[in-house]
Image 1: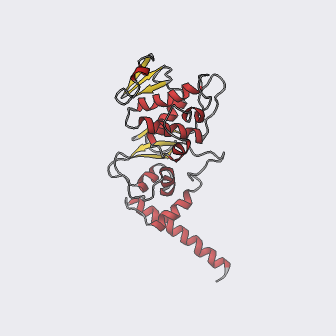
Image 2: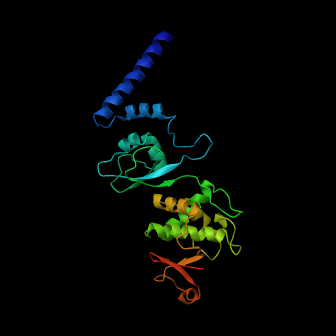
Image 3: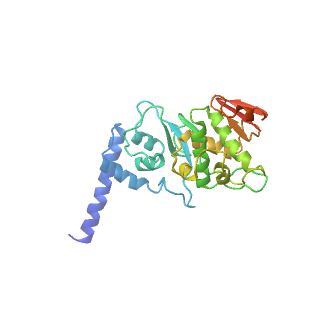
Length: 251
């Protein structure tokens, strides 16, 4: 077969695959794996899901899965691919999503219904020494929030993140997120544990809100659960500044 003939066949094949995919999408059917692969290649430049041109992970938002949603349908709605959504959410099986599940989807696209607080790289406003937050620090903060406050109200999760950042800004504590979350005698988690943690989307959203400057506690440096503490005498000496969910926040 000559080179020109091969080129014609390749072009026709790509066109046919696109047409089949388009027809299936119009009928509301799930395309085959082969058709999805072709569609993914066509969308690669729009939402790769690995890095942005600057080398940073893409900004994402959260989407709450509705009854009847499929991962392919969500991908189409947000102008991305199933493969990208799988990478963003660590999904091994694209068919295993359920109503009420929170997924990361590319930011700045798709319908507003079902979308909750935006995730993405942010810089914490600071009076000086603390600047932009790396993805690694953001992960450590979200991991601590997940361990300490999962199941708490979203405001309470933000509050736990704010306590960490208030300590970063206080000269009596380490001056980095890493230093605060691994300070001996403060939180019962090793750096290895925090690095291996997979926080849920709400923990990341709470970390981002705290990093953006939100502090529901008004400056707390400590928190505890009265039902679980083994040192009530110590906490009785600390001034209470807020009560959110099961946690009491103090200075």
